[in-house]
Length: 294
Image (cartoon, rainbow, N blue to C red; front, side, top):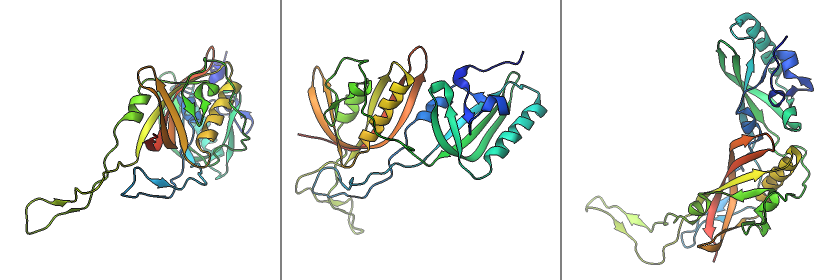
């Protein structure tokens, strides 16, 4: 009897099961990279010496494309000829310069249009043959229509994104977030001159000192009852983070109360993703231009 991969490891390429056609399935860890949200493209800004932070133009923020690596395996083991035949068929199918539809059926059909960039690695082991594919996703939020987040997984908490509780997204703030946002930023330096005919430097110490814009990490834990609920909330969170203009993030603690921060989305990374019995993930969101509001 032919060995079969777990259903969560199966995926389709252009509507055909990749295991049935090419004998390959996803290795653990690939799905977290698949669903990681894209970064924001750089935006224009001025950095005024006489003011804290930056003066950013966030009137039309846009998401970047991204690259991801899929690690795929085959049960061919040390049958190198069979593995290489399957591999060549797979790489040939993806090397036509076109976009291909990858659908991850084990996680409720999460689907992406991807193109092949490279094949950085092949391995033969006793039990598995392994290939890595580097793919490009040029269509962030492809075909997306906004749906408001919906979750009753966590009781409402006072951590807010533009006034909306993060628990609406099925998310709670985790350890390290407040420390990251309240860390002192670097000071903007006054004019400094270094003259060749004298030791040291002459630094302008007159006037007020202002702080540079900085980055901080919003650590979130997201849970949902179903995959569709998780995708609704994750997509809504990315959409709301990248709306025009800056975000206001409110973080609360029993000792320090509520603190509000001006910031803008930069990038994110999924650090853990578990599928059973109910899906959950840990998400680190890098926010830029962080300043505490009075």
